[in-house]
Image (cartoon, rainbow, N blue to C red; front, side, top):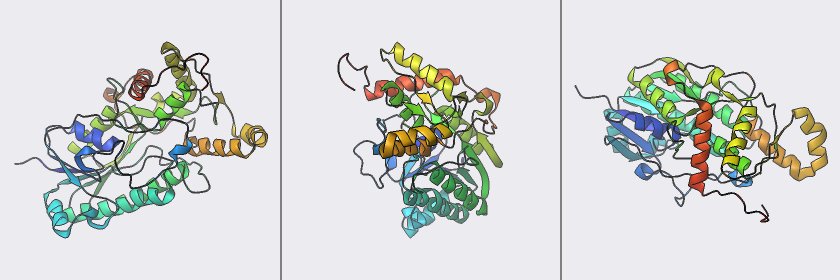
Length: 358
């Protein structure tokens, strides 16, 4: 009897790729807009985000690790029939035995129109495909789905992203072949060496800290940042699919999550070992922001603070629910150091020479 064939949407994205790598030795079809090459610097963009407003380096790098049995299909979840011809769609539906929907937007700076197109309409089209293929549907959501956040004038931010993920969960559950929802938290670098095929929001924090571009953080130092290595996220997701798990799985660190206070301490220590001289950002409350910082700083500072809030307002002091087993837990402090080192090395970031302005 042949092994079941798994379709992974967004198979070249962060979660999708990690899962594809974990399925080495098993037939996998990866559906993505850019095919086997994946997105990289210089590739045409199909949408714009406002991440250019933020003073950091933020991009993708090349990282391998796929098995030999991976077949790449160029498609688009935002389009009817996944952007395929009628014949190609029918053939794919006939071949696929299980669907893992990992395609979508995770960048909070992406405009609402694009976020809804990829996360909401995309889930609707993938659910329709899973029903046509009569294949169990595993839907990748977010560990922060029950949290709230703010946005910049309703256009982008944590609130926009989380609204789209709640709606996508609703759509996935309505699929007649719906099987499970997997809710990963922030996906960071590999537990072995910090490597990652793309840089996410936590890497942005690393960069801004090292380059002294993070003067304040708009929450308490006790606020938790929940993240896991990409190999754990991919490996656990693959195991859930193999074992035909049903229901909800919270793929989060839970009570093991680090506080932002500790994250700042670790990044300051890391920066100094690399020859940087980073300053500790100031933790400020919402009351301080409203009473002191915005009025004193004027419109430019108020806008910058609103951006920071839109990117971080979903973080809270209560731990996320977690279904993670003890065998999958890792040292998150060590992971943060390794991820920071990979970011700095891959970006060629070096300490500023004395006397040279920032």
